[in-house]
Length: 148
Image (cartoon, rainbow, N blue to C red; front, side, top):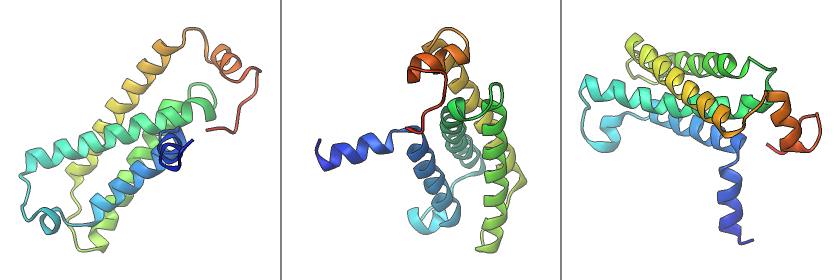
């Protein structure tokens, strides 16, 4: 396997993809958009961007917790983590001289919820049966794997 292919395959795995996306959201939340693009976004598109960024974060978090968390905790844990991350980043923005906006937190939470629900629907449709049946078929036994 080539080095580039290995890197791409690794980054597409659940945990690395979540970490990379969380870092992207952190950088986007830290660096002023106007400083990078030279333009200020109107309020509407800003909230849409927040929602989309956190929808991806919620989706990736559910993808990770689907196998790691106790049954029934994947969506709730992913949403709590994504919303908490959004709250922390809004506070961080105040520290670095950006504006902390409570409406951004709401857009983040809505986005995370939508992304998390999409992930749950996709994961449930991808593998019929109960979660424990999926784990046995995924890993060849009843336990969890450290592969992700």
